Image (cartoon, rainbow, N blue to C red; front, side):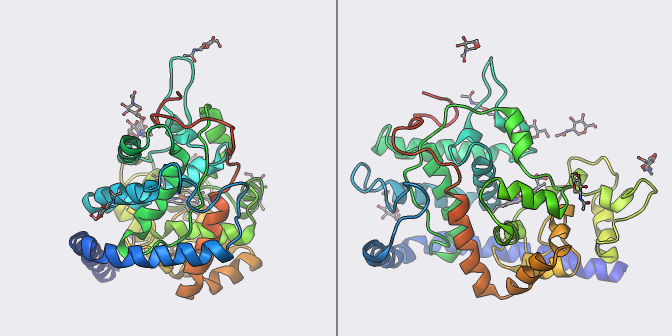
Length: 357
Ligand code: HEM
Ligand SMILES: *[C@@H]1O[C@H](CO)[C@@H](O)[C@H](O)[C@H]1NC(C)=O
Ligand SMILES: *[C@@H]1O[C@H](CO)[C@@H](O)[C@H](O)[C@H]1NC(C)=O
Ligand SMILES: *[C@@H]1O[C@H](CO)[C@@H](O)[C@H](O)[C@H]1NC(C)=O
Ligand SMILES: *[C@@H]1O[C@H](CO)[C@@H](O)[C@H](O)[C@H]1NC(C)=O
Ligand SMILES: *[C@@H]1O[C@H](CO)[C@@H](O)[C@H](O)[C@H]1NC(C)=O
Ligand SMILES: *[C@@H]1O[C@H](CO)[C@@H](O)[C@H](O)[C@H]1NC(C)=O
Ligand SMILES: CC(=O)N[C@H]1CO[C@H](CO)[C@@H](O)[C@@H]1O
């Protein structure tokens, strides 16, 4: 076991380093590749614009085409600048977008600060970390310089999440329709009630997703978001130390992996240490999450729960095909990005993302 652990650790460090290197190279190449990808994207917009029908309420393609023609490019540039400095950012922004959409719809309610009167959603989220919020505020400020009061924070977040994850690929991994408007309300209680728990079983997860108009297929596909990022020990250490109250381990967790996790999370109450969710590949956005899931190495009970239903298991197996994963993830993200959006004259266009106008 010791030998195995060592091997694993080495691999992890190596892969993390490699991913860092790739990201850095990406930053140098940025200018060259950008020209080409712009031409491609332009082509896509023209072609798809003719054929395409709009999904997701009254969101549309390039909604700010007239009112702020460079909006999406400004967001992309600003996002990439931040990702170059912080390779963990894609995970923060992807999760932030998910949390935004699951509470009151994708209306940037997650970004509002608490006030004297009200404790905001933000306060409930077990550490999305400040780097994410700061970055969104900065990207929004960039957009405001060119087009004050035009582009919503909800759209900025949806675009920034997509662009940060897509950065290493130098092409957008999913389409983001725009035209969302910003909400004026953010309540801590609603976050607690709507955001799925890592301790959930399959039935609760399905119910939670269904209440957002997402089906079992979306649940399995979007859980693939856990291919990047980290989780805190206290959110899974019950699986290691005291699963049923008899000092036991979760039998649905790979025992070798459990030993490794114990070496990282030394006590059941450690709420500081974090562990990669997709072991050995947590900076790579890929379908490796499903590979480790099949080996009973999903980090949370909510990950392991996807193996407890035959239908979900079938989808897990399908997503072991990489191209299938990218295709399906793009579709489900577009569905998620349309949950409960405010459009038309609803809500407002916030000037600053952390406070209502
Ligand atoms: C299926 C229900 C889900 C549950 C129960 C869940 C739960 C969690 C938990 C507990 C964490 C760790 C937080 C921490 O310790 O700091 C986490 C992280 C994360 N989640 Fe989920 N999640 C779910 C679905 C999703 C979806 C749909 C996405 C996006 C498509 C997503 C993206 C992420 C990302 C990227 C991280 C890493 C964040 C970081 O590195 O800071 N999750 N999730
Ligand atoms: C985005 O960055 C590229 C490359 O640095 C630059 O050519 C382009 O003008 C930028 N776009 C905007 C809107 O700032
Ligand atoms: C908003 O809240 C964040 C913490 O969530 C804090 O860092 C920031 O300073 C606050 N911004 C303002 C303008 O109060
Ligand atoms: C605080 O709450 C009171 C009563 O509900 C309301 O009249 C007031 O406008 C609120 N203040 C702010 C800053 O939201
Ligand atoms: C799933 O969790 C819910 C909520 O905790 C619980 O009521 C239900 O009995 C659980 N279902 C199964 C099959 O364990
Ligand atoms: C395990 O959980 C049970 C029941 O909650 C508790 O009585 C016991 O002290 C725990 N054991 C350890 C080692 O934490
Ligand atoms: C972590 O646990 C300590 C001690 O139980 C507690 O005081 C602290 O608030 C916790 N921190 C977080 C971020 O939950
Ligand atoms: C955004 C957020 O809630 N951040 C919290 C993360 O956790 C630390 C303590 O571990 C808090 O101080 C932050 O407020």
